[in-house]
Image (cartoon, rainbow, N blue to C red; front, top):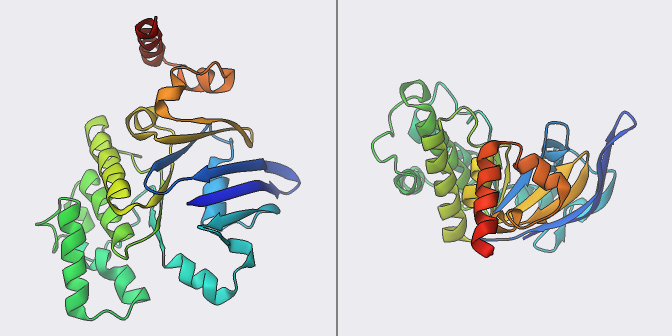
Length: 255
């Protein structure tokens, strides 16, 4: 579980995050959504320790990040997995080498132990035969699965995903969404996803935090979106005719 209390952050006198408080639950896919400039990327980077909040606290299962000493912060970082927007794979490395990289960097595992763990996670993301391929030799969807395998290879307690469906076709995006959700539930990971993809919200939005101009404007589940009267989230989600039709159908079912 990650708990945020009254987080504020400004850049050059402009306040980007304005007193945000929320909880991201373990074993759930927690989504941060909002328009460009809403503060969602700054919030994600604050959770990762890239930005230091001006005030407020971020705690990881009771450990307040700002109160940890350097060694404790380093230890916490080993519990974090990250899926980057562009996958961020090393072009010169094979799939197997990319996935094993965190283990070689941050653990004392033997070559045999690393191979065993890499084989396991590649099997888990359904990439059993891709070990010796380079990123340029596989599809975008496969690259994203390699990125997920690398993110979970060190058994993280916390998984952060920045626009994991960026650049993917809708069918592949659903596969990636479902994979992230399955892994989250299977290993009881606290997963936080920064996304603008409303299909992801509807598919896997177990807990949704909606930011508007640096303020937490709404929070709830994908099911609660269909019932809320909050104008900010309604305007954001139902800007397309598709979601207006879904909402109308849902409301008719309740009558």
